[in-house]
Image 1 (cartoon, rainbow, N blue to C red):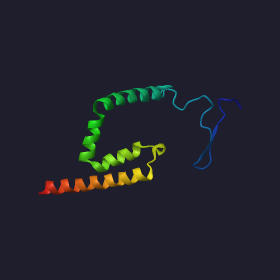
Image 2 (image 1 turned 60 degrees about the horizontal axis):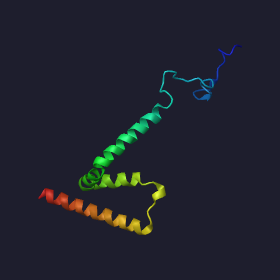
Image 3 (image 1 turned 120 degrees about the vertical axis):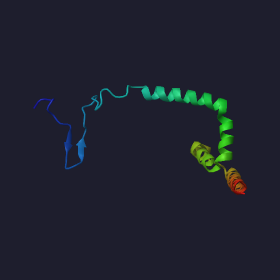
Image 4 (image 1 turned 135 degrees about the vertical axis):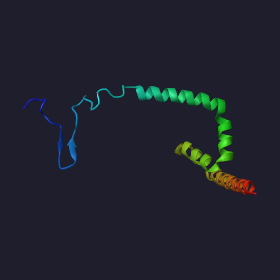
Amino acid sequence: MSSKTETFAVDTGGKQRGRPFRKGESGNPAGRPRGARARFSEAFCKDLLEVWKAKGRTALEIAAETDPVAFIAVCARVLSKEHALSEKANEDANSWIHNIARLSRLKAQEALQ
């Protein structure tokens, strides 16, 4: 049997077993070039940093004031496990969250009046 007729993947009743392609062979030879994702990520981060330097604090203040729940959710996603809050900081954060929620409810009540 020649190597061109060899099959690497075997269909066993709906589940494919084995490798679908030979080593070094792609299923999409015209796909994304090597390094393209890294170059995109690097350029995006550079642009993001520039916008952050220009408008970051203002954007945070607007978000905290207009949509405190989304603001807190974003903060929670951004903080990594390495920056886990101490117990005291956690208590302060909870107090801060409750104050924002209270102020948000007050603003909503004022808007209804």
